[in-house]
View 1 (cartoon, one colour):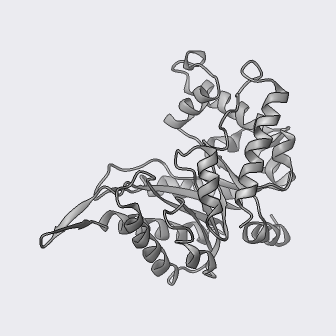
View 2 (cartoon, rainbow, N blue to C red):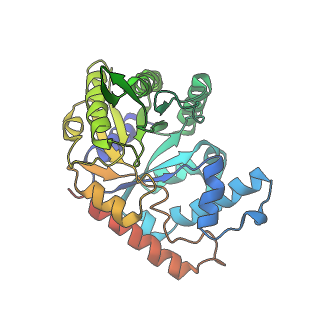
View 3 (cartoon, one colour):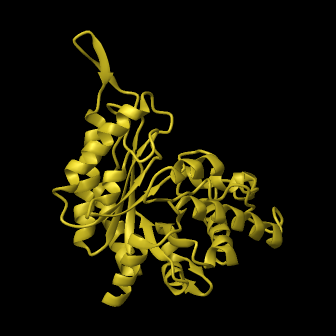
Length: 311
């Protein structure tokens, strides 16, 4: 990948309206995504390889559709298993670059058990091994997800207040791993996901906003932040303006496409990066949904996400 390509992709991520397609289901989320798309689990049973093959076929159906090819989708996040598979006769990352989409790869390896209302990422060595694989494949960047449930509290005197210890450990790990990923020459997407169901979610957002801002001052270069749409519009506006934040993208967190788009649209400089919401109403196979119906629905979903990115 030469410097001109890197600069071009960085400019796309910094400046263009559009959405980032999260095509990165792995493990247990894959079967659920296929079932929502009309694939009965009995089709693959206990054969995990067949399950992932079917998921790749579904992703290929999206990536080769005319609705995906135009300017409204600017990037895609891939499951690391997609790197050994092809789309249109090309390795998946090469295909994305060929059609002008910035390629990212999900490199987290699952979550630790919950502690203090948060789940750290497992297996940092494995994360870095996948980052190196993504680099060799020609990806522009990576994505790492942690989870903050927002359900941890403690007493300070007689007052019950949120316990932010877990949230801060998540941010510490995310920014530490971001430094390592950036050291390889990749741009990291940090995803400290705050559950959409968090109790007192606004209070947790204040702490997340503050904690991310503090850690950005020590960061050696640019990151992309993938955040849950906040309760108060523009809660994260200062983060979107930070010179070390290439872009703020927002997840759907299990919300419907309509509600997720509505929430993202309330936030200046933020764009959608949806998985489940992007796939809402899509059939994985032609037996589940004709090509014409598939295209029409995907086009509608992408149009809604593009409209939400225009603020």
